[in-house]
Length: 383
Image 1 (cartoon, rainbow, N blue to C red):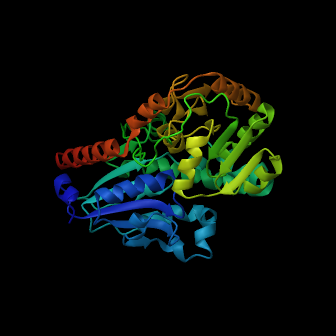
Image 2 (cartoon, rainbow, N blue to C red):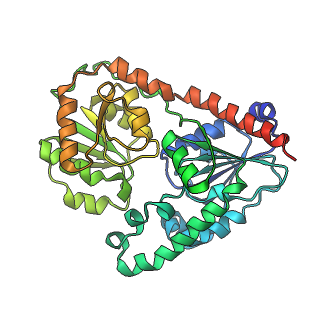
Image 3 (spheres, helix red, strand yellow):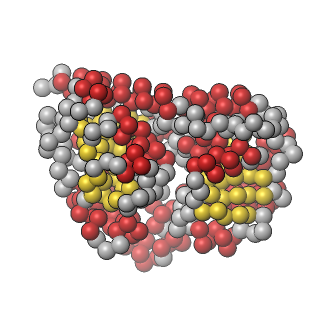
């Protein structure tokens, strides 16, 4: 039994995460939660062994029945219509505390009557609610398949809303997501910003205090439609600047066709290599609307400014003119203007880093444990 479990009043803890297929922002949050509850059992829909951090891999991982479907580790999104059934079959009867780390379906798990369920919500299911065209529109999967999937995703949205009452307390990763929880689930939430390792992400010794002479920009992102990486590619072409893209995803082939000689694709890199790229880029670009966005904060922790769309979580993490530039016009031309503006401004790496430290890992650990303890105490007062 972990010390933190005793403090929180829960003796048996289950953590439920949508899928374990790579180490992205949601998995970094999961890693911190696993540190808080080192004895908790980890449930997930699909687990690709070796795909996430050692702290997670060492855990006792219990995948759902989706794991045994053909090539589930690669094609798990194709099994989306099966997720509601798979989630509801996860056996949580023996636990006093259930923590779901959810951006898709696992917030709808069924817990025992004595258990408290706290959901750390990265976002209500994007493709079922407001981003269906970006994931399953005719341009992505063809007209016939798109029409076929639309009623399926509409049904999932209804299920998603109907099962929101299974959560005792929602924790949102940003004010923006808190608004989405309110809109789609009609529920309030407490804001607990994700953990950014500001000890690991540090400015290099030679970090320039002015970026005007540097014309090399950086994108670190999964290559999926809503990230809008094509905007960054075209903006850098218009600005005559170089762009490095770190990441992989289903959009990679299309983006490579759009890119010219000014763009380099690296695939996924080690954290150390990404940190080095952060520290030497003129700016990190965020052309899509993020629910929170850990990459911009990691970049700022390295003393690097960010050029971001003025929407979503970036409005909470980037201070316009101080730690970067917020762009209202999300077109390539608008982003090219943002690159010109960031090149003309003087930035102090120490000030940029100080802004990132608002989202430190230590703050997350404290705020998360406080929120869980409050949820347990509140649950005990209910009939």
